[in-house]
Length: 420
Image (cartoon, rainbow, N blue to C red; front, side):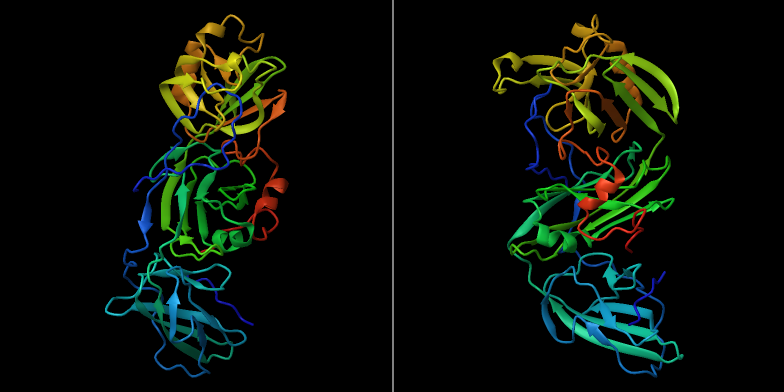
C-alpha cells in the first residue's frame, strides 16, 4: 500500500523515582527545573495546513482515520488515510467548528499528519485529505470527529531543556515522567517525542528501566553550533493505566563549543579539552575506597557558586557532615560533584580522600566554573564502581549499540532522523 509522503515556560518540578541514594558529597538538593508546557486546553494554532486542494477529485474516495462520526477522540489525534496504490498525499486540512485551519506536518515515514499543537477538548473537527495516484487521478476523503472531554487523571512530565539556552556537546534531551511509563505504553509515548537537529544528526531514545526518564542522543557528541528543536507532544496521549499525557512541552536550544573533562584515577589528574585541544591539567582527589567516585561519562547537570552539603541523614555516622561548598557542579542525583576543596589541596594529584566528589583547588574550581556549561561531559576512569544507570543524565555512560537497546521503537542502523 502506498504511504503518505513528507509535505514539506510554566515551571514544574517532579520527584525522580529513579534517584539513587548513592553515597556522595552532597545531600538531596533541588534538581534542575523543567521547561514549561503548553496546556492542552489551548487552541491549536490557526493557519494554512497544506497545499491547496485540487478542485475535482477523479479517483475513488479515501477512507480516513479518525472515521467519520467518531466521538471522544484524544486531543493527540493524528490524521491518516487508506491510500490507493502509488498514492501520495497532496493536501491535508483540519478545521475546528467555528475556527480556522489547524497547522500540522506529515510524518517523514508518510504514516500520518500531526497537528502542530494539541487539539481542543470537546470540540468537533473536520479533516480533509487529498491524494494523487500514480495514474494521475486524485482522490479525496472527509471525516468529522469530536475530541473527548478533559480527563481527570493525567501523568506528569518534564523536559530538561530551555529555549534560547546554550548547552555542552553532551547535553541529552531528557524527559521525565511521574509515575513512570509502563513498558507496554512506551512505544506510543515515544512516537510522540519529536527531535530535530540542525545540522541534521541521527539519534535515538533510551528509557531507564522503571520508565521515569528517557534520554535522546546521537551516536557521538553533538556538533558544536547545533540547534536542537524538541516537542514532547504528550497532551492527551492515552495510557493503559487510564491516565493521559498532561501537556505538550517544547524547546529550541543551541549547542556551544566543545568542552570536555577527562579524569584518570591512575594519576589523579583531570585533563581539560576545549574544541579538541588540551588546555589545562588539574590535580584531583577522588572518592576514598569506602565512598568511591563513579567511573563513566557524566554531564554537568547544574551549577552553584555557593551551596551547603548536608549529609546528616547518611546511615553511616562517619559520612555525616555539614560543609559550605564553593563552585559546585552536580554530576549525579546521588550527590557527586566537581567542587572546590581547599582542605584537600595538599593531597590533590596524589591521594583520594573525598566522599565521592571530584575535589579540586579553589583556583581550579573557579576556573572550571567560569568555563563550563550545563551538558559539558566529564569522563572518569579507574575507580572502584561504575556509574549506575539513571543516577544523573547517564545517556553517554553506555556505548551506542547498548544505548539503542533502550528504545521502545526500532532504530535504523546509525540512528533515526526526525519523525516530522
